[in-house]
Amino acid sequence: MNPRILIIGLVWPEPTSSAAGWRMLQLIEQLQLISNDVHFACAASKSESSYPLEEMGVKKHAIVLNDASFDDFVTALQPKIVMYDRFMIEEQYGWRVKQSCPDVVTVLDTEDLHFVRKARTTSFKSGEEVNYDTADCYRELSAIYRCDLSIIISKWEYDLLIHHFNIPKKQLLYVPFIEDELSFDDFEKLPSFSNREHFMFIGNFIHEPNYATVLQLKKMWPQIKKQLPKAALHIYGAYAPAKVLQLHNAKEDFYIKGKCENVNVTMQQYKVLIAPIPFGAGLKGKFIDGFKNKLPSVTFAVGSEGIAVDDWGGFIADNETDFIKSACALYTSAEVWDASVEKGRTIINENFSKNKWDTVLGIQVQQILKDCQAFRSDLFVQKILWQNSFQASKYMSLWIQEKNNKS
Image 1 (tube, rainbow, N blue to C red):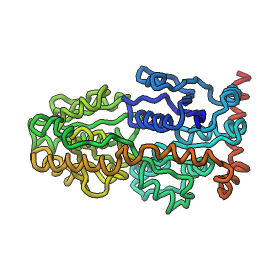
Image 2 (image 1 turned 135 degrees about the vertical axis):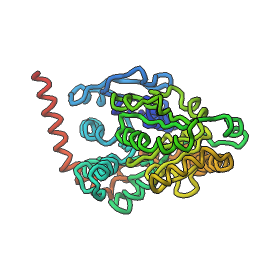
Image 3 (image 1 turned 180 degrees about the vertical axis):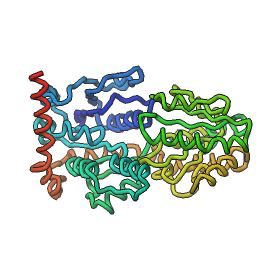
Image 4 (image 1 turned 90 degrees about the vertical axis):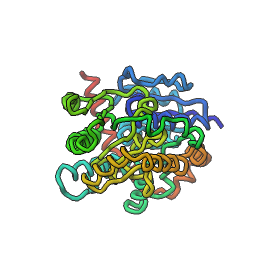
């Protein structure tokens, strides 16, 4: 079996800019385990950081949003499997795919649950309880119901969908980041406590939680600096806007460093990753990268969500005072630091090992592909949505298409 696979991307993957970029490359590699005929289509413009997918053997296609040319494209391509990169892409292209290829197996890569992230953002800004009863929630859940399978990156989000929203288990597949196991000998070759210095943070500034985290760091840094006068804090991240750049202050040893070209080389220079993330969703790739590079971290509970509950590779703080105390302890004690980096290695090997997660996606998709009609036979909500509510998105797209044609 060598099914033709089409991935429709929100953006062209940028693995050096965000965790979402290298997550997409991981999923492509997983799909290539069952097919060497993988296509990636996207309506967004490419950037200098866009990954050369052709080097992976992936065929690239530029498509147009809200345009009938996509119908001709997908009809000619006739994929057996289509994966949507986030629910917004499923809304925009799902009905066109269904119309042209009614039997195609559909997969939704959620990345993280966007409605969770938005609800937490609103809660953080308003000071009110998190409320998931929103239009964003209905839209994302509808896309999950419409697709045959949705990839969920966080165990916490997987449990939320099953136990709170009652999504059928057969329509969900938990697949976290997939990493090579870290052997003790290889880990020992990385720079030790005494060969590192300073604190760091890293995060793509397109994502609002990363900016909010830097503001938290700006607030807490003077208290850390008072206890550790020789320490500096270096902030890395792609797409930093002016409001981030203006936080740079060399006199305070608070440096905005810009985009990080090689996260592994960079992280191995630092002693502690500090990330007081106040809200967000999904898995935070910065911590996975840190554990892989022998870099322990201090964060709040939302930062560790979906990665580990106990025995964090560093500290999970409850408040600002606890955070500052933990950061200083991790920075000054070789014993605490060594124990933390070993816990980080254990987290990678036990929760994200390639030996555990390799092939899981491919096997599940192949099972559905064998008899997709039988798989869908009891998915009644899916059938209802295809008959009714999805028509709104379809006709909105057609209206935009017609408007563009007249222009």
